[in-house]
Image (tube, rainbow over the protein chains, first blue to last red):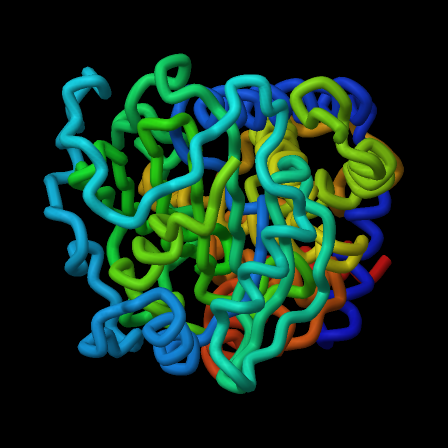
Amino acid sequence: MTEEEIAALFDRVAQDLDFPGIEAVVSEAERHGRRLRHRHRGLIATGSVLSVGAVIIAVSSTGLVAGLTGTLGFASSATGTSPTPSASPPTAASPSATPSSDPSSSVPATGPERPSPSASTPRGMTMTQILDDLRAMLPPGSTISDVRPSTEGDEAVELDYNDGQGAVDFSFSVEPTSFYQRGPLTCSQSPWSGTTDEGPRPAGALPQSCVMSTLPDGSILQDWVTYADAYGFYGYYVTDQRPDGTVVWVQVGNGIIHTLPQVDRAVPPGSFAEWNALVENPLWHL
Amino acid sequence: MTDPGVDPPAGFREFASARATQLFRLAFLLCNDWHEAEDLVQTTLTKVFVSWGRLRGISSADSYARKVMLNAFLSQRRLKRSGELPTADFQDLPAPGADADLRMTLLTALRGLPPRTRAVVVLRYVEDRSVESVATLMNATPAAVKSLNTRGLAQLRELLGADQDLLRS
């Protein structure tokens, strides 16, 4: 039997397979998918992380590090090529560690003064504002492209960034959510909690992890290395939950997934030290 | 802003409805079980729904759907460690059609292939995909796919054995 005959045989058999349950299966997939998305959004609203799809910027390692070092005051020791979940600024805690549950007992801020949020402010920074500030922080020579509205809201930006070493997805958002309504971030309440890889992680990829820390000003910092999706796409997900109600998060992937997937990095660019510094920057405000 | 918790993402239902039969055929040939194939399609479409916002264009969604389905199928097989010995008992087959004998023969033979080999053969000959495309979907090298394909074809020919005349009819 030739290869062509086998192909024709498969074709005959496949064409004879009807699927009468399409509508029911599609509806159920929608219903279940909606529940999953809702769960993600609900967890975001209670102080956790969000799905991979929100804001996407492509960032590369060394160039970004250099740029961020200059702009955000990063330690010059940051190399950006070997990010470690427990990178310097905050004191790392175990993935199961829970920060103080009483924000009022937090140590007063010692860092740069942050603008006070207005309780009546309905939204955070606009996409234009976020973009302008991000551009100012990214290193010279890097490029940002495919800027698009985020599916997660006006506070977020989605774009591709490339410093010449390849684009990756990068997400960023500044959200105006009450610290007290959200409750403190915890690893166990995150949508990433309990997730397992959908596909193999790239060789040399970091394992899933979650590190919690509390900053001197009472902010809670959460550093995730997320699960890998079907393409081996994963990323850093860093969230800064501030006592004033501002939540700033950034997600940096190890490739591009929002278009035809190109996942070609073992680890996402940058380090947690750099991404922590980015979200902690007092520039971000409500 | 559209709340994905309330409204289905634009275009998803059209995509899912248009592709469900194709995905089901692929699923059924992979797992040889009607209900399992339905579950596989539903799992796949659920994940596509969740990721819809970041899948740009139909080709991206198509590719993603197949990747999800393959991973789900192969991980199920790893978990079950079923061995899946060939058997003549197909309790979940669809109602017999004109090609019922042909289908039975082919499915029996397919069931005799190891899961990864089966996946390669189905993708190559049902989906008419190139070696490179299959390699991408399966996170394998083209050489590995070629090797699995060659072995799969040889095994299929052997398993089909005397039924090859029926298949040519």
